[in-house]
Image (cartoon, rainbow, N blue to C red; front, side, top):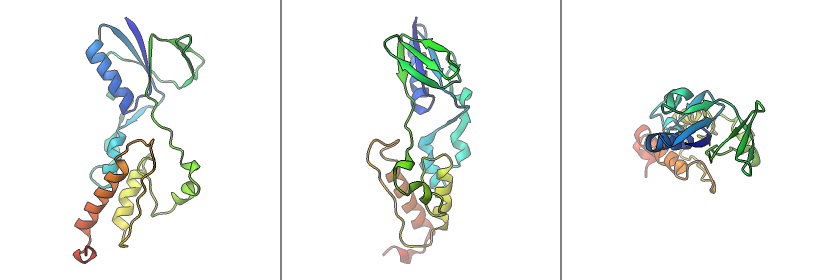
Length: 185
């Protein structure tokens, strides 16, 4: 049996884990390394921002999204040693592997955008990919009374290339349904 370690239990890590177990169950021993206790299905966060669903609907216990047969180690990886096929965890233990899959997601670096952190403290500035940020987006949409709204499309790499556009389209749909027709001329 091949020992497979998957680092990260977001949508990518869980999807790869499920495929390996479903397709190669007798050929692989899968260990998932992820410190979180909750799994957030982040692709839904734009729909939360449009009032289609709630943030609570995007959260499940981590254990509930794992396929049967996966071993979960609830630790952070602190070092990768590909020459020796080892990873070191934050409890100073090491794990060996035959195959390593890193699906740790993306780091949000809002602090690298001048003024972004301060701007997000305003009532009318929001970001869907911050935890609970899409809940704020929905409140902002509901409270918008001006004819102009500004959306941004950052350059790649981003979590979801279509996410910012989807937010615009969903906001446009909400505004068209909620605002008087004279706004649309």
